[in-house]
Length: 374
Image (cartoon, rainbow, N blue to C red; front, side, top):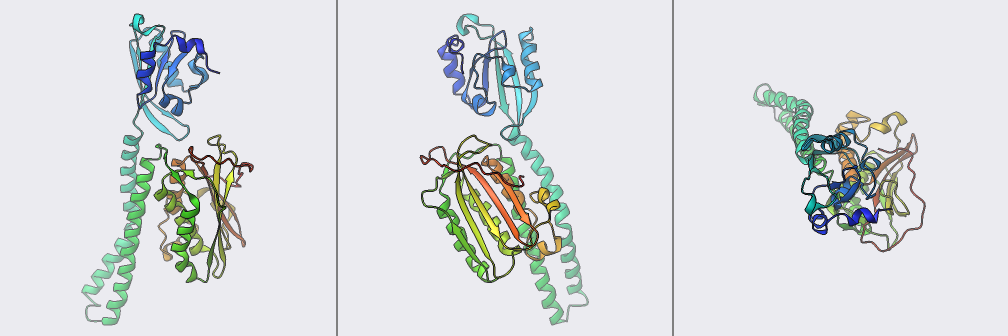
């Protein structure tokens, strides 16, 4: 419970001022007790116990050391820190002594965190992008160079060979295009992963639209897509385009890898409580009947460029990035991806997403407990 007497010692002007700051700001007494925390501090640092020692909420050694150093007499202290929850974020920490006691009451120290996550991730994404592109594009580029050289020499006057080589070149160029598109998509998602979407998305219409979009591709393999989404399902917190990409990837994977002539089921259900948020959510499962995936592969499926069968994945147009994109989008939505697969029976890819804060419907089913979480 908050200590109301502690709150009373904060001048209203000071409390109103820090509440408007976009970055976390905390006002602290000389005995290291928290006097006030703005909304960003409450959301990001989970500081909810006003009047308690800062160490009871923040257990990061660098943060506590900086506060103690300033309380001991240092005018200010800065450091770079990383906070792990709810997703890893990087900050520049600034702790400053406040000497104007007449206007600020019992406030002795102001702690501020400036979010530098986007800048650090952008730099890391640039490095990863160059490394990944140089590695993954090496093979198709080498194939194109070899085919072009052949067309310019021995196959110059051979129409049959020329047509065959041009078809291969077309396939390799499409593969590179898909790879670059997926890398750019993954980079965008990872850069913004720390920013939680605030909108609401109705899943029933979204899932039905995706099923209709992919129906022709499924029919080409003798497959059907069945959606089971109850009416009145609460909307989830998120961005429609990103969630569209998540479920399109999962259903498309089921079409590619499940057995021909089988049924792909898309099942959505309310969840009473999510461990990640403490509130209600919605679970969406994409179930297929295929060969299944061996248990030793499951923990690595969402790694970038990890493929269970590299040859088959590439022949089907896969880039090895689809499930990595799914994982990072779901992380951004403060959700969870889980995978359950049995050899010879098929696989179920489940996505658990928090209910939109604006949703009024209350669910009444137990918390989802997946077999394998990523």
